[in-house]
Figure: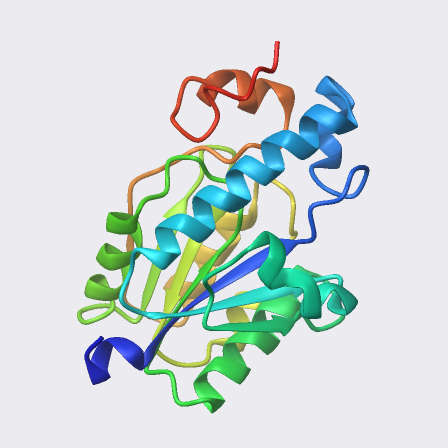
Length: 212
């Protein structure tokens, strides 16, 4: 790993795999056990592609008390840190601030919802940050699966209606109002509902789970 690459951080936001606590909207369509199976597959996929990159990998763990055990279900990260309290925006903002305080030059945030994300997605994001202040990976439900930054941008985490179809649009509005340069990567699918799962169940992370 070069010094430049080690100064870039990938922050993965992950929940402890636990029945009834993961993928609750998906569970309403396929049951808690199947939803947990899907979540574990997506988590392992995200961790795997992060491990393939040359950057510093940090797992941001929810709930915080699961941090000490997180290496058991998400091995190979460089660090395991608890998520802060508050809504998703507050937790992401805190994680970004802490990453830059550690000396990171660029940061990419990932969730564990997207089967299409790849090593190339992450590498492309860091590369695009050479020419843009912000990089977004939009999802077809109006959110985003990836956010890349090279400095703190608290406004991107404030007054956003998280878990709605307005997240990406509201974020773009902030970028435009503040005249920040940005680029959007390819649009992918998040898996939050049974309809989402059925649309992408043929993809590699999900196709052999035995869910009917």
